[in-house]
Length: 351
Ligand SMILES: CSC[C@H]1O[C@H](OP(=O)(O)O)[C@H](O)[C@@H]1O
Image (cartoon, rainbow, N blue to C red):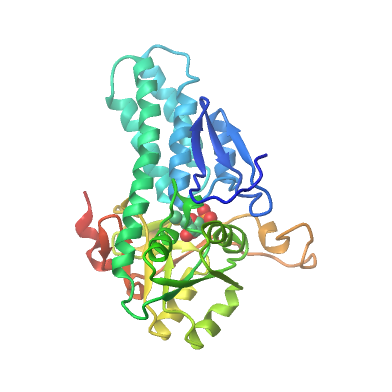
């Protein structure tokens, strides 16, 4: 276990010593622990159990998971190799259903296997290179999103107070973050007074991860419970809302952590700009609107036992959707690596 130090740069997924090293995000903020992942089964478990989480980070992790699966395949016959790699892909696809980056990254890796050579060993090498490229591209994309977000933020006041939800930070990406990337860019540019972070029940990624990232970066942060957001807006404490995304439909409807939709409704009510920050790899152009986005339902224990103590008696039933869908009509702009886009113009960016 590596004790926490003052991190300026946080990389939740690293290729080191011929294996993947993950920050164990279930142990933050009290413990900074890294775990080594040497096979695709362990990577699948790490994604499902949220050791690694956040749409782009899940994509990077799945890409490396594909390589870990590929390197173990023994055959030298390419067709058989591809068939076994498609089995690995199917296993990784079953980990979490909402973040499209997972499926996008797996497809990127399969394309390399389909089209990058006749020699199995060469294809394996190409797969590692592709996973590393996906990771590097996402880091650069987040930095571009930060710059684009800085341009899109309100001009007044000079120093903004931004509310964010869950964690769309370095920990949720290859580094730097999407929504937190915008926050980092605003802080560097002297345009940020303070971050308000929703704790984000039930997994508390805001309280545990976003606050940790802000404290590590020296960014002033105020933690609030989810049910305080309306009051803070009514008190005119919030100048803008910036959140991440797990899957965006071609019309701009956006799936993000549960509670995002409510924030968007509140922001509309209080005439506060509401931004979604996400790479284009999070857009699912195959979906016409958000009604088609699969919403993950997680173990109810996350609700009734957020720590070590059960907080509700036996006898109740539970509903634990991990995401909700914010309609495009409530989104001021989607901040991508190609700039801030009106939700209705997203389809024009389809490659
Ligand atoms: C940079 S996208 C992060 C996105 O993913 C989070 O979900 P989870 O923690 O369950 O993986 C949340 O929706 C964030 O906005």
